[in-house]
Amino acid sequence: MTAALPWDHLDINELGHLTIGGADTLALVEEYGTPLYAMSEEAIRENCRLYRRSMERFYQGRGMVAYASKAFCCKAMCTIAREEGLGLDVVSAGELYTARAAGFPMERVLFHGNNKTPEELAMALEYGVGRIVADNLTELGTLNAMAAARGVIAPVMLRIKPGVDAHTHSFIRTGQIDSKFGFALETGEALGAVKLALEAKSLRLTGLHCHIGSQIFEIEPFCHAVTVMLEFMGLICRETGTALAELNLGGGFGIRYIAENDPVPYDRYMEKISGVVKSCCTKLGFPEPFLILEPGRSIVGAAGLTLYRVGEVKVIPGVRTYVSVDGGMGDNPRYALYHADYTFTAAARAGEAKTQVVTVAGKCCESGDLLGENVPLQEVKPGEVLAVLATGAYNYSMASSYNRNPRPPVVLVGENGPRVIVRRESLEDLVANDMG
Ligand SMILES: *Cc1c(COP(=O)(O)O)cnc(C)c1O
Image (cartoon, rainbow, N blue to C red; front, top):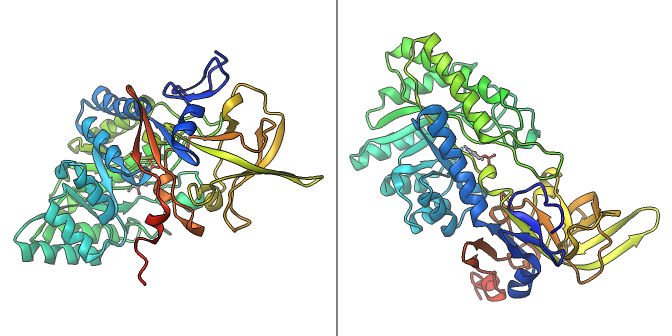
């Protein structure tokens, strides 16, 4: 065994091969082909448990950890979240349908989105989802009317922009006033919406929600958001006489993509956040709310990796070396979208020194179809297997079949070995909806 990698579920075996959840990645490729997503079931479940234990330990379990399914959504993942006692955050009819297909208990589902369609709202009411997180007045009006027409009361939370800057990439920063999501605090819009929701005959306002961004490594922005939100809940109580019972702080907890990333342990987040909740509530004379957290990336991100076959290695003297793989922006659009960092390694020689700096390119007909630039890598040859680490979140879920490259399968490595949880898209699948 060589030195372990800075991810618990990854290792290097006696052959020098990279392993995930104990499975040899080259054996996985042998069995399932490339490109291939592989995920460690134990790593996913352990993350679920760490969050739940933190909620128990630091907030006496008076809350719910809801997995944000947009990070990685399929029936098997919904089943894991259900079995681990988590809630589920969905943002579309498709995610909601997947949850139900997996038998997920609807009372633990939260339905998000800045522009839910009337059809999606109807589906949420029909399925009986536990909380619909309303984003705007149009939605509140539609939902109230729909619930009235059905003779039901819709449980809602309101998404608030707390105006917190989460020090992250502007594309994935959502808590500030210039955001398409939610009601602004500063302008009085949020208070107006709360009053409207409280007065609406067919809505039951359970509390407030905020989500300040993603891939956040600091605790401070969360503490600041808690303070802003609780002060607002105090104000609502004084203005309307209603003490809202629930506070949903969203997700956004950062993970390790590259060795330098240093994620905050969940316990530290939870300890700090619950401390701030308790002290704020004491100061405001406000009852401590039921807390909801919505981690997505931090449940599945580091638990997955992608395996590719290297094709051409194109050395352009004095310029750069392109290492081309048999996937790319179709299965991982995150570099093209936000220049996301990743760690690359030759799967067969994961312990060997990385002696060159390369650009890893996909096979799509786009110059921007890259997975990384100036990344260290071993001297790889055509035909070798390349692993990209920490691709469990926002890879499969963002995948497309651009250029009609079929989407890769997802293999979950569990106690009893690997099993396919999403099968490889076939060429027939690609034409299945084509008419004529
Ligand atoms: C995206 C999102 C999350 C999850 O964010 P992560 O960064 O993956 O933890 C949670 N809640 C809401 C409302 C979101 O939009």
